[in-house]
Image (cartoon, rainbow, N blue to C red; front, side, top):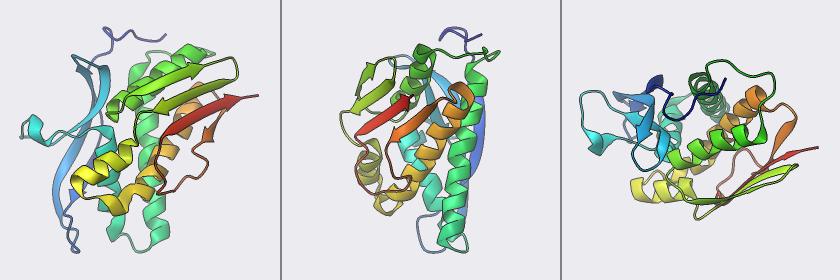
Amino acid sequence: MVKTDDDVQEAHLLSYIIASSDMRYIQINEREVYLRHDPDLGLVIRGEVPGTGPDLNANLSYMLLEFSMSCEDCKDRVMTAESTERFGEHLGQVFIAKLYQEAPEVFTADQLAGAFEIILNSMGVAFKKELTDKQLRYVLARSPLHEAAGKTGLVLQVAMAQRAFVAMCKSILRVMALDWTLAQPTEPESEAPLLQILFATA
């Protein structure tokens, strides 16, 4: 059964190494990713650095960029892409596992929408939702990846961060709604602003 917002316990999801932003990509710290209760937003995915305060916390948009940067010491671009995809897939899987005690035989469209609203709240972006029998559309007030990149200087990581985001969305669909597909964004890796997300079913 699905847990209510009050029932879901704050939970550790995963961790990853943070690399320096210079050309040496030295391992400088570890990011711990949690499912947390935010007083304003409800459940969110948040990154923290052990032993530090909230000033070093990161929202999901920043974490996708940060992980992509940390992968740039891979041997080639293909390996970087594979690593970012695996990160997105794994994050989606553990997020749903913590959100649900027992998966129902069939998830409802409202349950699917609820999961993705947590994702978008975690990315720090306002959105409008349009839900019909055949489509679930989110229109974003701004591109969360571009906004986070502009604030942090991780502009070169936007395309790979989107690849991780797309992989995360698809992994959630594989658990919750096999008959639904990610119709937009159409490109798994793109520097175009992420302003709309569309899920569709036949």
